[in-house]
Image 1 (cartoon, protein in one colour):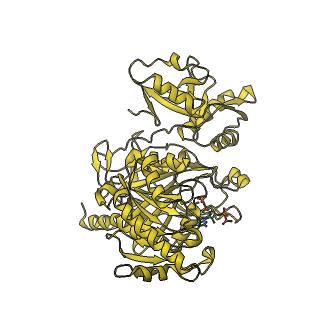
Image 2 (image 1 turned 180 degrees about the vertical axis):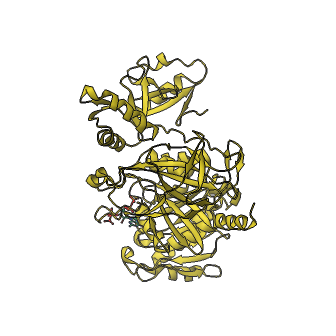
Image 3 (image 1 turned 45 degrees about the horizontal axis):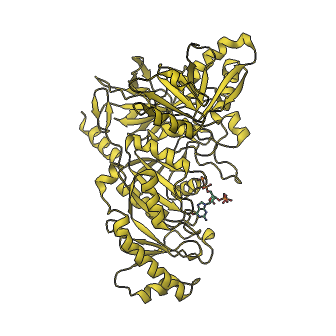
Length: 554
Ligand code: G4P
């Protein structure tokens, strides 16, 4: 290969970090993202950072539905540079717009930042997103937020990470108090830049308006308890509070020798150990320091398995896969944009790649980045980057590989993730049944909803599944706008689905009061349950069977 390109590739790969933030609504993702962007140079807004409820949205209102709801249904990537590192922060829709796209985006990330509200601990949405990260064992960094508010005991939080998520923690920093008594963090891990130092939180009595970017950093070694108590008491606390904080910190640090693990880079990279940091995004406390350590520890784009073996990101063959398709972002254009994550090689505009699923050539004539409502043509991109591709003819699907070279690598398709909302779609005008069918077929291929067959009914009266309920509205909207089929959605009372396989599987055994057995579009059996309890009961009664949260592949 061209040695110049080889050097360029190696450099560009090494300086990229592509990650997503996983959290439960209200943990502070928007706030943290905004603070991270503060440190970035050029901000490429690809439809991310939702405005806070009260603020005007910073996103463009692409879809009519987005306009009506004032939310961003689908957004993509924030790209910024920090201290020579190119950061691609993939946006994971999390509020009402939580959908299968949120999961799929995680398949395009090389690491995740798990943001936890210190007062709440691990919440349901965080858990689900964590499980998806686990499918690929990507490194997970934990940021415990809102320490300026009364929080739960930090040792409890560490314990919860292990009990609920099954991941061990390496506390990199440790908080000194919380709420009114939050005095900062101790950088306990010696591997940290600034390890052994105290970072004092200067609230000036009002954490929420603190604009301070850098905390005061003081080495802890050699300080007597009295000196520490003095430091911790600061302006707002008296010396007794200071003493209590010193005692608590020292006792906790001792306990941590057992409760937490030492930092181990290899285990972090395998997703077996999560480095934990504490801070307060709103007061910008601990954010820059977190970012600095994150880019140091988090991996650059790595190798991926393909049909022709493992592909290194520095492989000269360009390769990428589609992880999201967004339609009608601009009602004026009425087009579709397929977002792809680049895995290897250099991307250039007008590159002619192969579309591996169809075997046809695909010319990348209109690769785009989005700046608010403006679209900007991308001339060049590298592994780890995300590029939007206009696909007016609808030839791209979620999970498709676009690649060059002989042989061109193909990546395994995107899994289907277990839906939590179910419905039947009913046509208002029976004459439009054909349009409905075509629309359902295409929109499910695009990944808007999943379509299941009822056993024995073929394609008649399919049942729809979605990870987020809003997808049904998106479907309804698009069926009408693009296929002229006005429909009605009737929700069904199921709450979870599992793909089931194993010896002695009998679909009839799941046709019960609280469960039903359907087939996905590849003919795999999928059982829907009304309650978590019903699911557990079934699992207990069918111990030989596997109940999977993603569709079986191959
Ligand atoms: P999300 O995107 O994860 O849903 O969370 P978002 O950043 O919107 O934050 C949710 C709420 O938590 C916001 O308050 C935000 O100001 C607050 N918040 C975020 N980080 C911190 C923190 O470190 N400390 C404290 N005390 N609060 C934090 P809100 O009242 O819902 O909205 P707003 O009125 O502030 O806009």
